[in-house]
Picture 1 (cartoon, rainbow, N blue to C red):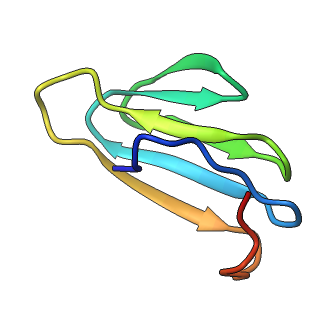
Picture 2 (cartoon, helix red, strand yellow):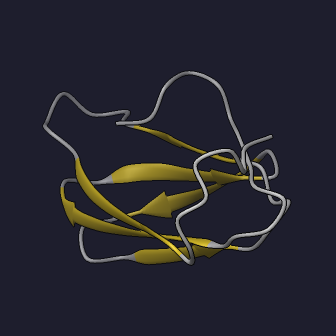
Length: 73
């Protein structure tokens, strides 16, 4: 699971797929229900984070549009 701080990227997009469990996807301070099987695309410059409000495990796959480890805001 992601840390407590939202982050974003200047150049790349990032896709999140909720494989197991139900979470909350936060994009630009707006919260979206993220049930198992859902996917979210975060565009460049969109600040994003994930929260697990349950007591169950949350497994997420995230895919970056291009690997640029220094592209973080």
